[in-house]
Image (tube, helix red, strand yellow):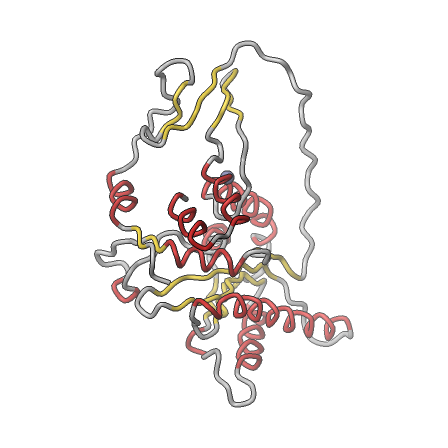
Length: 296
Ligand SMILES: [Zn+2]
């Protein structure tokens, strides 16, 4: 987060700077009482904590529905990778393109032709450090094989008009899902990965990770204001109303402040730490040696 803050400072992006600081301080001041802790969530997309809560909410909401689909398929729709300057535009085009396909089928279905497209989709973008390109793409889970085939066919038609080739068949993917839960977890990365393999070809074998901060900033800005997760063709069940208890005054409580040097929250009055967490060696090593501030 501090590295992203530096990038935003260089660019004079004050609005982004404010959000990034909010995330830096997400849950940094907390109060504990009666075995519970209370703090403030920043709710930003680039906050790993808030994002994991959002993902869990999505999974809990959609898993019971997807589980009932007859033959769920996993689909990936991609377009040609682009340079940083083009990413914002490409992200919009990808979302618009999908919307066009969805609308077309909705209309024919309403006229009694064709089938209803049912699924969930998630927008993602990764950075290719070798080529310095970005690949905005959609991950979907759809209700059956026929929908998967229709989407790929229409997607290729849409991106390959007037002799231009923006999407190849080879780069699109569909496969049957055997476990709806892991399938759902797989598609919801919520925007982008923080850790990137520097050489995609070496994936898996002795892969080391890098954090490409400038590239991450490019992705976050391109996705700003865009909806990342969306359902289509079905309604989700109504939200159950969470009853919020009346505030109760407490006298027995402790106050804690996050201390980056300790990787833990420290009691504001004593030397007590809250969790006793010790970061793994691999994580500290990545954070101190594997941050690339410039590639984009
Ligand atoms: Zn947060």
